[in-house]
Image (cartoon, rainbow over all chains, first blue to last red; front, side, top):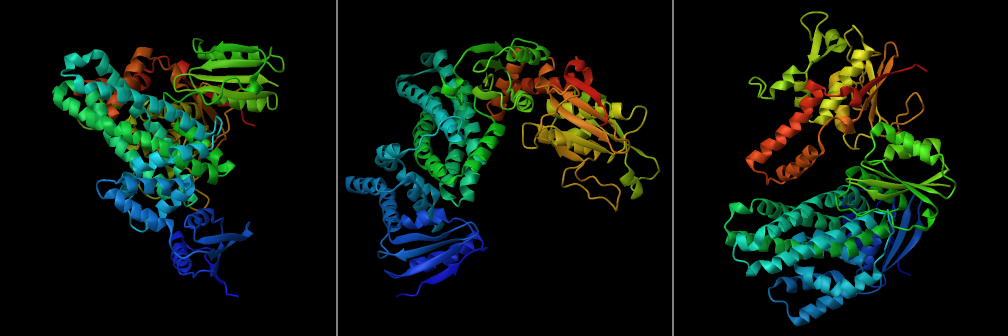
Length: 411
Length: 227
């Protein structure tokens, strides 16, 4: 029997771990095996290695203080990474042949979201730039993966942060569709007069919704991505962050042109809007697809329930976009029975509290008070927790930014 | 109007400063004369915060009104006041409010001065609480931000309730400010729009600090009975 070497990487910094692990793993001969000891669950690494289709990986011990995995080489070192690298080269070299396109499609269809993320991550560590991966893969990636990934997609209910982000994506996509329609009309138009006030206002509105989505990106960057990075899924969120930077630059320029079109002659206006709008419409759609079908899917597989609670808490603190849909599904089965609606918005603030409890005190079990307010009634929730614990259910129907709606059910 | 000395808007200098004794500076010989009283002005608060806004103005006024009630006829003492902010430091504007309180009163979070022996400790005098603030009647006012100021020498305490929603301003004015703010932030505003936005913005700050219009509806200071 072959001797199995053991490498204990507990306590080492991330880079030091990698320096010990990868040369040893890559140096394994067919049939050879290696034991690795960690102080945490090395799941991302396991997926990364599995992606290469060269190893059998088994857990010998799974926590709580240490995780031990055994990596056994089952095939010589022909791997997906090399294949992927070759593909990138071919895709980058000008015209993409039908053969390359087919090869890329086949490769991408045979790989799942997390594995692709891991392979991308490994390539970036070896010096392939984010941009190279992003620009080369975009179209074919989407074409190849659309059906396969959509079929594998995990859906989560409201108010899960991923649900909210994906619902917001739908609104952003609708705005992109409107941008696309605007761009389609533009080539035939010869002057601002012909474009008309309605269409210039339309562009302003589209630009407003594009910049309003910054808050969506902020929630991803500050609440979700750090959690992925803590699980050593570093590169995929970084690629998305770089996308955000690119979009931000162009959205800003488009917003400025939309609001100051009178400063441009029409031909210049048309060129700039076509260029900026075209980029945003195409690239943002592809970005959204990647987030919905790859990044969020990786996150849903990796993050713990506690971590999702923390992501939600952070998201709530950052706030939502003006177009964020209500984060509770309508007609929830737990919310049946008689519903009384109280619109607090026109009432003087000092009267609102009293009125809520006046109605609440009259409700029978199973009945619901729905309040509509002009701010988040979070403090009221605290009061219910302090005074009515166990006697009520609290569900947001609408979460700002102008109006909030909550159903409070007596149980 | 612009103050030629400070470069700030003129009305900043119309805001009464907060006066403090500072025993730590006195003990360590920072003053030429014993019993020096320090003044902390709104202009200095703006320099610390890097901007003037309704939040900074609200925090400044909250502190001023709380100390007037806690130190009637006396000069407040820096480092002798513990403050609880009912909100989390990374939630909404509570972090900025805490910074203003800290600057004015010396009450610091965990990063503050540890003290010299048993004296002059500033660390942990400023706390943030995620619990809701419950008033004497056991109720939570869902409309307000709430802060508690407590004198360490006699344990007297007051609760400040600040409700920005009750500060008078017309709906169309707020909507216009929001619209202009987006244009300013995305660098699409004309010089006139930028000026209009700035005037609306500081107009609200002035209304709070100088005119104090309807202050009884948006800033309340209540004594807290000692347990």
